[in-house]
Length: 523
Ligand code: HEM
Image 1 (cartoon, helix red, strand yellow):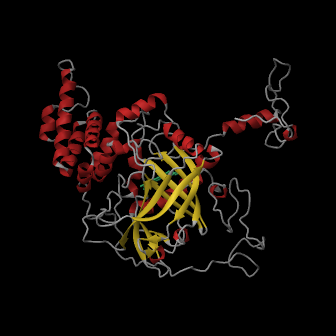
Image 2 (spheres, rainbow, N blue to C red):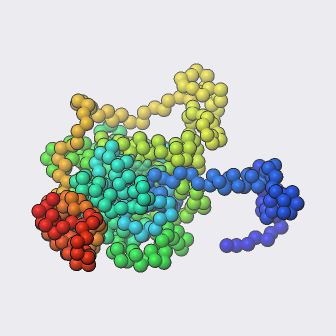
Image 3 (cartoon, rainbow, N blue to C red):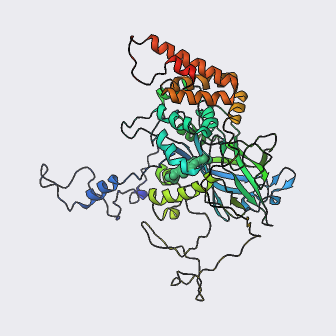
């Protein structure tokens, strides 16, 4: 830190309160005599304390722990040999070499605001593109799939993964109770319990939009797309032991790694790929393209390189930029669209809803969230509003539309609108083609040996603490996914149970331990 003594800055450096009044004594309360009671008209003191009392806003209900950085995205302008405009008219992707400013926030998911960054958890990877058409948020994770495929299950899932409502202790039994009862989670559990559940840091992890979106071209024709970020720093994941070693000394290691690398001017970079699928239900596939528990196999749906992101500036203030940043899946620009992915649709309600509560009704006026382009709305009022979104030359008396008195006018459509046709009965039904375990088996077989070893050791350790019914349900899913996966999990759990009963005094049958024959009989 540098110390400035320049007397010309003396006035600028004078401590004031928020009303601009100079503070002449920041060490002593105003009291009756130097030992006496304090007085209530002590404005500086009251302002200081009452602001301090309000320094926290509600932390994010998920993804509370995070780190952020600024940078830019550069488009490569093409999909293979074709101009990218064949697929999307989004301006952010046109004109090879064009750069768009971005702000990125990485996070863990389940644990609170100051929790260790070494914990087993997916990682958030949220990118805000400040495009010439307004903001686009790509709110993704490091892993390419998710636990569930229907948004109505999200609050239950998060309740099960967060601490117990009575003890306030996180419990693997509650985690596996939900997962074993929701077999669509098995592919994600296989990834999270492998070393892919503890990325070494934020710079050396992938990112993915996870949900299925659409690209729309100037003819209004749409394709389905998935987005993936690949780190040019390489990918690195940790074993449980390596993570524990790091955590002993530093539980902020991922934030620190990102911050220090940018300060050293070693700017992390990711390339953006898209997978493209023709719009439609694709009955020929053994999965639904709108199911976010599934990968789109690379050999059928190639990865097309479309751009690069560089992070080259640290935040100047953590709270203003990282804590108050708001990302949402509803924040799309012309040429990008939603698919009917049920998770995406549910998420799109949830983000702006929580942000109006977490940050406030005017959260989009904060510099980190405001588009870096002209904004002109007829909205005003609400807590913390500090300006009207007036257009230059607009009649300020006209805060409605339509008007003949020089008010704001609707924009003209920049291309043909994408107007998908929808029909059907309104139902509450899960999708067909659930195929919950096939890809988990493929993922297991694609792991390297050390990754399979870690996966099994981690599962056996945590499942050993669970009720026998939960163990059996998880073993059945593993067996369905892959013969070896199921067999080794079963053997490992038997061994763990034997070791536990050997160390227990005779006659002690308390707790959730699974008797050997219950495991064998599968109930
Ligand atoms: C954050 C809801 C699924 C990635 C959040 C927040 C909510 C939420 C309420 C806090 C936002 C804030 O306070 O600003 C949901 C719901 C989901 C869902 C209802 C399912 C229906 C997912 C999935 C992904 C994801 C599938 C990954 C693709 C993220 C990320 C953040 C986040 C990265 C943190 C954004 C930031 O850094 O501020 N989610 N989420 N979420 N979610 Fe989700």
